[in-house]
Amino acid sequence: MTKSEIIVDGSEGEGGGQVLRTSLSLSAITGKPVRIENVRGRRKKPGLFRQHLTAFKAAAEICDATMEGAELGSSEIAFHPGKIKGGEYDFAIGSAGATNLVAQTLLPILAHADTASSVKISGGTHNQWAPTFDFLDQAFLPQFQKMGGRASAELEAYGFYPAGGGAIRIAVKPTTETHALALEDRGERTGEKVVAVVANLKRDIANRELTTLLKAFNLREEQGEIIHAEGPGPGNAVTLFLEHENVTEVFIGLGEHGVRAEAVAKKVVHQAQKYLPAKDGSGKISTAVGEHLADQLLLPMALFGGGVFTTTDISQHTRTNIDIIKQFLDVEVKMTQLGRKCWKVEVLK
Image (cartoon, rainbow, N blue to C red):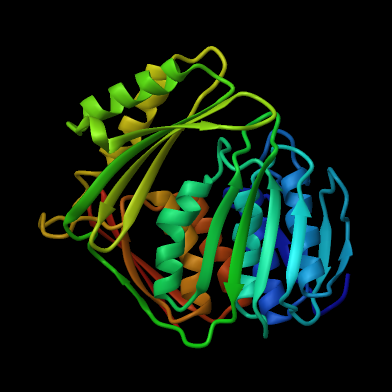
């Protein structure tokens, strides 16, 4: 251990991979070395899994960092960053691990490079307990772009657990100017869409998912779409896109062996129903983002121009992310409850 390292306890707060990802991003960007102890200490199987190890090694390659503990299962790691380098990169998780979580780590780093970058990440694209490609592309990236981020994403191939075989590509240009995010109200609804994806499974599964969701939200048949994806194994995902003037929220259900298609779709219905009626105490503000997008907005806000958003809830993920950000950056984050399902979050720089 060196005196200059920031020491992070990976078992604090939510105690999962978010601690690792945020710490790596901020270490690379600020140049401050970090040591993470008790990596993913609150998980049933702590330590580095493949997707975490890939994010660790990828961040190190991009900023020429020295590493300690870069192996599967490591419970303690150290990361000493060098200069961030843009360019062409290709990272393979080697399993169905979440490509989008690796992308979440690398996007803010590459936004601080001197040159443009193109990064291919191979693995799973639609995973349980992780943002899917659709969430990254339709919910997160438009807000990232509002803040000054210059990035886009492309789905090259679908990848489902356990076979994997998917790939995404992110293109990132250096950030030249930053803006405060102003996202206090979602605005008027501008569109709805349901997409069901099946890989090596019967079309009937997707049909039943669409039927359940279209009926639940009184949508027309043409607002549903079925995609037959190629892939090395079976997989299924159904996604509801709710588009508003200021934000698109994305709700996802992933098929599981032994779980009926209708049950998968109903999980999506329940997620969306928590979001749809959320307002402040006066009933005037329609809460802008759900708890998962709230968690992801914090880091670019703290790095770029700050700002404000409203969210349905403050999750343990969000609180932990705030704590990690404060260890690296001199920012203030204020959280104010405006209603039963409405919190106002301000990032002050």
